[in-house]
Image (cartoon, rainbow, N blue to C red; front, side, top):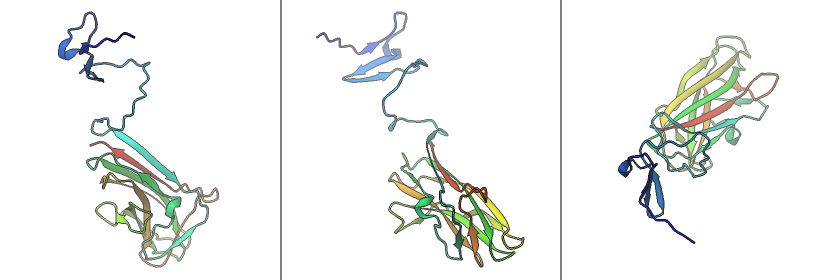
Length: 204
């Protein structure tokens, strides 16, 4: 068996030295600055420790509610869907941000003037303990019902927060009513609801 040991490899017309596209240190090879990987190349190496430019989406996690039954929520803050609407994510760095988007459809069951606030909680366990995600417990916008009983208020909200930890976290929406009860729709063809949660880690 033959073995070739070199420090750098460059093309026939290349300048070599620090500009060499392949540079070796022991059994580690590094692409030189400006090196181009052909469009047909396949990269099978893990990118878990790669450095991405600011604004790059590192990962996306999502969940869609499958339950069809509605849920009644009072003035006590709860995570009404439990693990049925939950995103589990492990951030690569606490310097990165999380972009979180949620869509929830709800309506008042007790006439006009019922309102609810929607927020986010995260936990490093199974929600035996939990932490408010973001600067405020309940995140605008809120829905104020000014119609009759059964008036519908679909809510889309998003927030942008710094990654709280590099340990695995579970994120769930939290909901409460300010007065009386509000009814959260389940996902069903009769209500045309698609309650969902999307979380993206963004490099900073």
